[in-house]
Length: 192
Ligand SMILES: [Zn+2]
Image 1 (cartoon, rainbow, N blue to C red):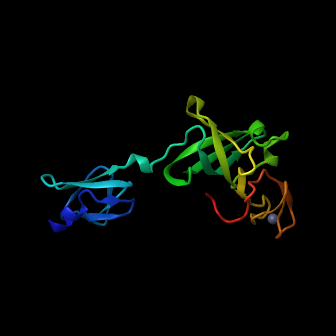
Image 2 (cartoon, helix red, strand yellow):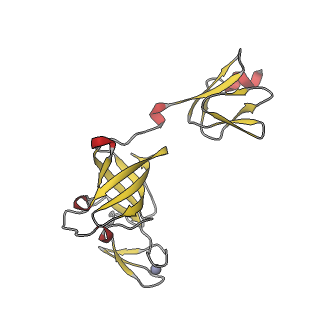
Image 3 (tube, rainbow, N blue to C red):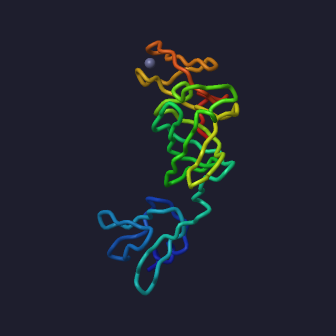
């Protein structure tokens, strides 16, 4: 009984232990593994004293959704000649639990003319971008500005991290030279 009082109203994150099935019934926002109940969400734990059900109510302000003007970080998934798809995992410096897909068009890569997307990014790259439109529930991205673009890029031949020399990227392992649109803090370590 004392543990349920402690848990009710408590702020929890995914994976936090909420109790055991001998004591509680797992409710929404929780999961059970080997007899132990854990939180599946970030939010407030709530225990119903009558039904003994423990639930977690997600706290929405910890679940940011990209909007126009948001700075997002994502990993490049698929690159075609004029577009690239990114899986967004961070919005305005907050890691997000779900994932959103962002679309980058070749005309939003640089203030200079870029003909083909493969000269700007490749699958696997970690890219910082700005949301310029959310028309039709699609997040359209831009990496034109100096602080936007690749933060980490990988050699398409051997997978080693590329070293930046302006627009030219060099793999110090196999010597391959590639092109990217990089952020001005490329390779400095941070992904925010
Ligand atoms: Zn290489």
